[in-house]
Image (cartoon, rainbow, N blue to C red; front, side):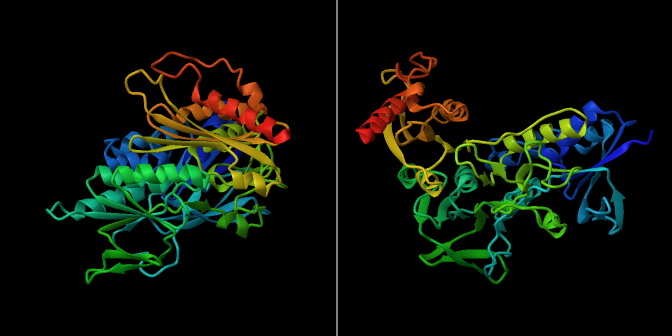
Length: 463
């Protein structure tokens, strides 16, 4: 019997998880696996790049979970530095370009996995391609940034870094530049940093960043990058002023990399990501799957699709896809939008809906915000922690939670993520049997204190 051929486009989290899982379920005699990756690296943690740049992670290779050689040892035909440039859905084949030799060729498939990831947002503004302007999407990007920093030398004058964008990547890269001894300015178009939070919680992040010595400028849209005679960045111009820079780091966010799929006529959603069913099969295509940062996923709270670029989702997608391709069964039901980050010792977490998200889907709600500590107030090391909770009017169903605090704050959001997934009300949450000891929590955990206050808000709104 001739083996089926699985072709995988993309060699990072979703793609190689799918390839590896399919290989576990079917041997080479039943399934041939061919994977294409256009870069030099596979199966690495893009989320770890800011911590490599900062020096917290010593070596680039520490971020690599599995090398190309390790994948090949598992009977996966992994072709590095090879980019798929065309997808022929009707003919069941892909066209590939070997970037080293320049050779192009077609490869047929019985089953296809699209895991092309996301691309960083890079505005088409003057100077964006200048030396010293860096994105941080891939390991290659991280290496280019480190090389650029080394080229600056270490003279006595202050070195200045400008970070464009104040989302997860932006605040993490601000920390990385601060740890490397730079004077750091963050330019943010929004009202407050961390637009994934409501503005009142984002203000707490802004104040904490100022306290760390990071200058955050809100309402500042970049208009161009200015360069010196050598072509290297010298300043960043915005509609709110001009800021000197020896290096610029772009942290504006990412968009799904779906150009190849679009050209092939595959369905994409309102956020530009591929649309799939629960099995991660591309809608309307029996033998094509997609996962990772190139897809849209169902928001279980809002009831609509959204694009979320996270390695946690990508790896789960890959497991589901690989199981289905390999003859097993798996589904990915959706997400509640949980994410955590930090800037120095400040921890930031969110899950579920913001206020504007709730309004956008027609939900009426109440909110409650509490201040507590992440440990018993009398225990050494107790630090402030703020929790904001959003619940549906009348029903009291939990809709979202945001947390800003010091060490030990962020992972408390996982309690809320479970409650959201289970469809719990805030009143039900008040009875949760959470762990307690003074080094870890006050007698009433801050999440439960917020739930109690939100219950009161729900009752007050109903009276």
